[in-house]
Length: 604
View (cartoon, helix red, strand yellow):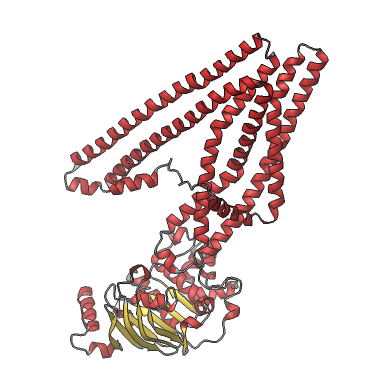
């Protein structure tokens, strides 16, 4: 049930972003957002001017309405004059409001574009340890919700908060100018009612969120049951599931009834409290008018100012809460931007930095543990060497550390002890972008982007010519199936390449590697998930690709590495055996021989 509660919270459509306390430190950090406004700072300042003018015209309306009422007892010319002034006031307010909205939206969208670009550029330069410790979906969701909150706050909430603050301050001053007695009466009633309404409203929203949480739990039960319907029926647990779902829906019903009662009480409070307060003020104003202490115009002014101030007091609390959320969102955005990136040069072309590299690789007593599990060693003093253009196969049981070798070569992680050298120089001394520019990976689970086949092959060498791409596809045994598609190279592969078969995706990945023309080639179980026919075509392409390159091959099917120059057998993070296929098969009770015989027996 704890898992279901977590899912409910995650799926709740009314889930609120956390709020941050408004302190001098948090405000100072939030102001860092203004660095992303750039050249539009003057536009933001101008927007604040139009905001002040909007608030000023709103405050002028009740005063002019009172003057209009007073003009009724003077002359028709005075009535017409005040009517024209009011019409001009609304025209001015309309113009001010338009420019205020346009300016704030323009500034915000430019700022958000800069933030998005900064976050994206920063994210893709973060090390693998960052992504290993976080789910990509969570990062994406968090960034999206945080930026949406910042967007809403800058386009609406800040402006509304300041406008309502202007109306509250100016309105209270105007109330005292109209009638000191009425102002004191209003301040004793309206703010109290407005604040109570705000807290009552928050309580109702909390109850509504609880209802939505329970609905999400109920939906989770429904989804799990229908997805696992075969298990439900196999265990004859229909009654158990019906009972579980019934209890969940009854909990929704009970909570929804409580929320409904609270909403009914809130509506009753609004009717009695707010309107009752207004009636009390009007009653008191009529008494003052009857006593000759207030005229009709002043009474209209007072009532309108009271309504304006009361509505603003009620609304400013919500705007303040939204600003708190925006400050929290800003903190999380800057937490992300404060993550230390890899030393990657994103300003220069990899091709322009491809100085000669021999591709002589050596591991010297390399030990490694993943940072998230530092107490669990993955590699123990692993030592081996690979000469230029040789094929080194890495085999062993699951969890032996095979893929870790590839990750260390790519410098996704740095070694704990020992050293890795390429051409006699320690791997950490090479510029990271330059180093990876000399390597290419063909993984087991090929990730294709959702564009065309041509775009996916070109990823190995951005800006490659059509002829270069075609030659790479031909060398990867991919040109035949590409030409069979009506759109050829411009065929859309779909999300993650779902429109292509596994063998076709592998050959696209090989074509991508061919185009990159790497010195060091890394093959991570590139044929393990393919059928026999696809494996044959992919293996032929790989054999052509490995010619003249230093190649590291992680293999599940040992039949694909028999011709490797060296086979490393990893077992529990140590090199248990190494040699050629023929040498390892001669070792009695050897790990490699045992694995090979097991696969042969299984195949038979």
